[in-house]
Length: 412
Ligand SMILES: Cc1ncc(COP(=O)(O)O)c(C=O)c1O
Image (tube, rainbow, N blue to C red):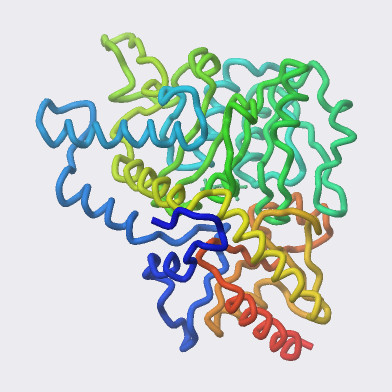
């Protein structure tokens, strides 16, 4: 495996682990810069899924037969692996979900439905993805709670000087993203959690854009909940987890009812298992969890610190190259940031620019990126976004700059 410091890691060999990258799109070599939407999968993950279906496929926690034991062992092993990956104290603090969106909905419905009342406040930030906004709007509508927001400064960072004033005792929960999917901003999550804890607020970290990109440890962060998606970190779609601190999960009622989550059932009433099984009704995404564990193994084989360093280099390089382009503005902080560059070209709408790039084999994303309030904050209909991962190269960034320069001439 590729176990070394960044300089001695063979990034070219790593790239070859991703068969999908070796193809032409519209007659041009594919440059895949839509990693914030979903990342590509290495052979190790594809093979783990195939191996499971070819050899061990059975339902978990049910059958008293060999295949079911193997499937259960692999599924629960994946839970332990996910716990270890984010530094959870126990595997019981990991609930498998379909991803970040489902994890946040679980918290909003189960925890929110129990602990949030009329007059309570949910504190969010202006940079939240719709999946860390809409579930809280639905909760507020149901309960009469209010939403409050930490503003975003012009440079794409949070207006932290306002935090003390916003974090009043009515705040029941403070939910925020670790890395902004539009701006690349890395929020000081441990500091935010400590400030929230001081007023007794529960915290939720949306780690969709950070879990596969930088080292993180829930006990060091000091959060009550943390959500991430497998597909944004080399794992399969439909896989993900909700971390919940044991004491907080224990106090939460089920949200979905069905098989697997009960202790006993009569026609009138049921009693429920302890977390995490209380929150996993029905047959789970067994292959997804196994694939996610394989993705974790793969990422840890490289090392998250090395991935962060590599991706930061790519991002800095791209920022420097953007400076050569006329009529182009990059959003977000100028200092340390995630591997995400949202930009605006004066002459072209993001959708037109993204289509132009696609015709040349370059996969970007154009639009509001599920950040409509944030786009409104910056007075923009949307942006074009390039997002990098460890298999990307500076040559690919050069190719992007070439295409954007052509676009500037084309749309002028
Ligand atoms: C910051 C952030 N939060 C949440 C999500 C939602 O993730 P998923 O669609 O995997 O549930 C995304 C996806 O783009 C995201 O970037």
